[in-house]
Length: 243
Ligand SMILES: C[S@@+](CC[C@H](N)C(=O)[O-])C[C@H]1O[C@@H](n2cnc3c(N)ncnc32)[C@H](O)[C@@H]1O
Image 1 (tube, rainbow, N blue to C red):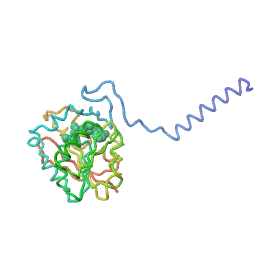
Image 2: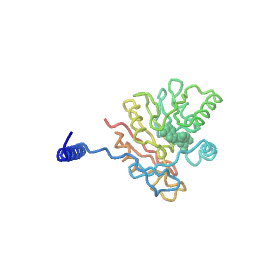
Image 3: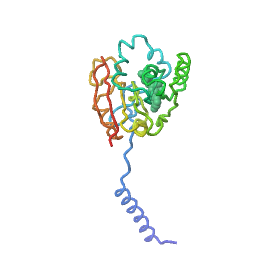
Image 4: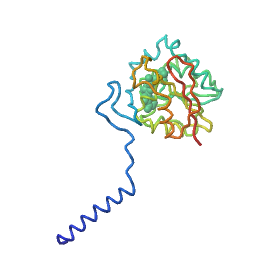
C-alpha cells in the first residue's frame, strides 16, 4: 500500500505525463462543428466556415426534372465544358433522378460508362427504371454512403457533381475518395449556384463561391484548373489532382 505522500506523488506524475503527451501530440481539431445558431435551411453542421445544407429528398424529383430547367441551366453547356471523349468513364455523383446521367450516356458511347451514384434508394430506383425505359445500357447505378461514393480506385476520367457538393454531410471524406477514384489527368467538374451573387433566388446554404470551393478542394489535394461562366446562375468549376 502507498502512503499519502507516495499517492500524491503518483497523482502529480500522471497529471504531468498526460499534459506532456497532449502538448507534444496535439489532438486533431474536429473537422465538423455544430452550431446552435444557424440558417433554418441548413443542418447546423459547419465545415471550413460554411454551413452544410440539407439533402434534397425524392420529393424533389419533379423539380429536378422540370421542363423549364434546360432553358434555366443549359445542361448542354455543362456537358460541353466537361470535354468528354468516347470511351470515357464518367461518374455522376449525386445523380438524383438522372437529369445529367442520361445526357452523359450518349457522349461516352458504348465503350464508355456512366456511374450514377446516389445515397437514396428512391433516386437509384428511378435511375434504373429510366435506363430500362430508354434502352440505355452504359449506365451503372452505384449506391454510395454519406462518406464514400464507392467509385473504383484510379478508374474514372471525369466526376460531375451538379448541385450536390453543398449538401454532402462529409465533404472531406467524399472528396478524398473522389480524388482516389481519378485516373491520371482526371477532372472533377462542379456546378453550383453563385454565392457571389445575392440576387440569385436560391437559398444561401445551397450556393457556393469559387473561393470557398477552391479552399475546400485544396485540403484534399485537388487544384483549381478553371471556372467557366457560361451559365446564367451557376459556375462550372473544374479541378484536377495535385501531383
Ligand atoms: C439537388 S440533387 C441533384 C441531383 C442531380 N445532380 C441533378 O442535378 O439533377 C442532390 C442529390 O445528391 C444526393 N446526395 C447527397 N449526398 C450525397 C452523397 N454523400 N453521395 C452521393 N449522393 C449524395 C442526394 O441524394 C440527391 O439525389
